[in-house]
Image 1 (cartoon, rainbow, N blue to C red):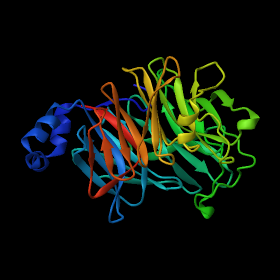
Image 2 (tube, rainbow, N blue to C red):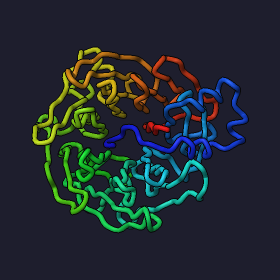
Image 3 (cartoon, rainbow, N blue to C red):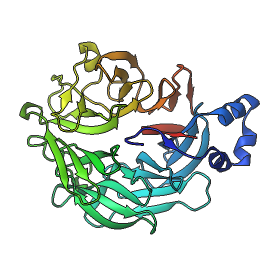
Image 4 (cartoon, helix red, strand yellow):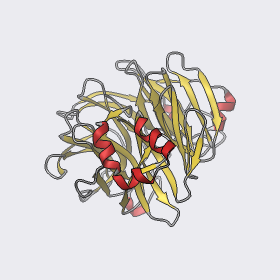
Length: 369
């Protein structure tokens, strides 16, 4: 598997992970839905009392498992080999937490090394032995990928450069060796919080790097007139093309394209959209997810309270919706599950549920059972 698409977990192990207490608390219909589910979903959250955590959700939006976090989380990655997940701190956070859904082992909290912080994203090697995380070498304003040994308590065993500034999401491509990195181009330093320090001179880029030796394979920059179009989030479609979403740091009156496609060996391609759809994003794409079975890509904008679904083959927008603080999106059947910063979960059917105690963070990951 590649990108942010479906990850597999053994159904029997997952049902054990939910626990007898949880299963017995469900109504007969909710229990039947959970047992028959094709997938579960992982996401970070904030409780309405201000505490942070990460959760495993059923397809119907029921909370199956939670862990506490020391601060706000961002994205989650899953390792099918071990059945463990890792939730990363939101930029400029300095931790990630490793956990398994069955609670067989206690969560492991790993701190960033001196001079580094995380950008909220990571990915496992195909065999699950290594974890790769985007990091900031903040004193040198250089993007790095930190390498962690999953078989040795997630000890940090190396790093390689992303050949850019402000790396955000990274994907492992289909060959199992090439890592794609979205360099957002924005310089930050923890002494200044989340302040953006180089907006007049930023240079976003999309790079391919060999994870085994750190060698640069390809680097693509946007045209000079789009140097403030920060590339942030990505996923791969059924052809292996990488779709990316951007956040524009220039004038609010400008309306650059915000979604693009990267094909190995070719220049980056930006996708034109109808003006009403593009303006609805308010120059901000918060998450990208591909549904390979359906041949579509979904993009969300919490700033614009809207999301859209694009036909991957043509680049045409086939669905455009309004939804307050929508950001998390993951493929489900022929459509998508979306989550919001108000605590709403919307299924592909349009059925929605709202949690009274939790609001959902920026990303949600589908895990097939």
